[in-house]
Amino acid sequence: PEVINGRTHKATVVDLSPWVEYEFRVVASNSVGIGEPSRPSALLKTKAAVPVVAPTNVSGGGGSRSELVITWEPVPEELQNGEGFGYIVMFRPLGSTTWTKAVVASVEASKYVYRNENITPLSPFEVKVGVYNNEGEGTLSSISIVYSGEDEPQIAPAGTSALSISAAEVEVSWQPIAWNRHTGRVLGYEVRQL
Image 1: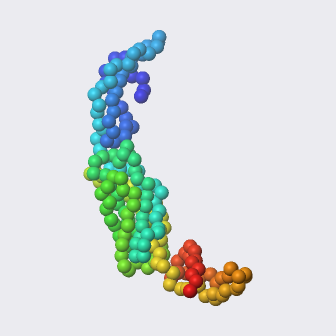
Image 2 (image 1 turned 180 degrees about the vertical axis):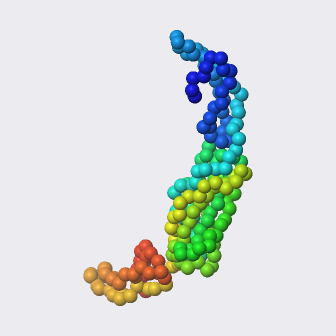
């Protein structure tokens, strides 16, 4: 705060955070130095306000077939700006103009799962997450691209062959499955003997 004239007995403190408890002390000063601080004032909470900080690290993906999993970093309590804090999750298929909106009324939430049998595996969605409290809706994050859950591979590897290496070993080889919308990301293969 600025130094206040010695004949003034009150001041307005600015740039405080909404919905935060503060206590204040006053210190007298002159050309010789600064005196002892006063006793602290009683705790005073500033008024609530619409939240202005959007969640960060909005991402997601994974999950089961027919799911869109959206995750974010929760907003710390000191930036929630009031009671009744929660999250607004908005998403739409990439290229669509209509947003689907969901409300997550939990301060600690960091994940939302949308389930719909009509979601094609590995479909890209535009996603943004915002905040709200009893004072109103606040800021939305920037748009992130999140993919819906995968389905199990629908195509078997082709060209399977086996070559005897020794009395106890056989080398099995196959053509890898190329990535496409129906196979998803192949994370590995399992070799079974019949």
